[in-house]
Amino acid sequence: MNLRARWNLVRFFITFISLFSGWLLFTWSLDTGSLVAGVVSCIAVSLVTWSIFVDETEAGRRAHLPRPHYFLLFLGVLVFNMYVASFKVLWQIVRGNINPSMVHFRTHLRTDIARVVLTSSITLTPGTITVDLNEDHLVVHWLDAQTTHSRYAGKLIKGIYEKLLRRVWL
Image (cartoon, helix red, strand yellow):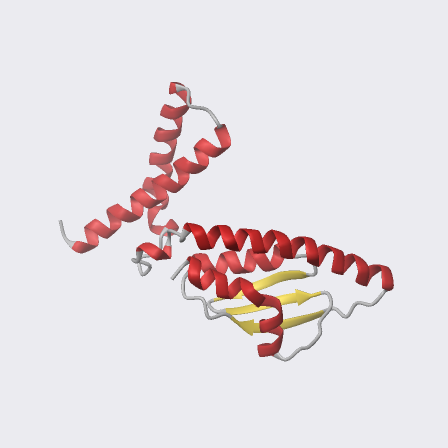
């Protein structure tokens, strides 16, 4: 078996494991019928989507598997920032002091999954919504734009998220 065929097989198994993990999470059942239905349906979907689910150029193990201790730290920081930002947005709305703007900036994250997690984290944080992600370029709607300078706006919006995600996915 050549290297390309092995990588295609690994991509299939990564797709299957991800789908089956989701199946177990959503069904929350270990009944034989449920497990058989999950395995069969996940194999069928994996056969069709493995080439789309895992990009051929992302061959590194770290491109898909996060480092758990940094990922838990990232989740804690995200939840804390969501609460802090929600109170800030509430205070700005009550005072009527908002300055909405669209800002453009780049990210230095290398893997697609890390970029998607970054954009989702930005969107989950109240006051910011990621409008577009194109390779490493992000467009974000910012409710209280403190600046429109791309580098400074990126530093304020990405904050610690990008630093932690660089450690989660190398």
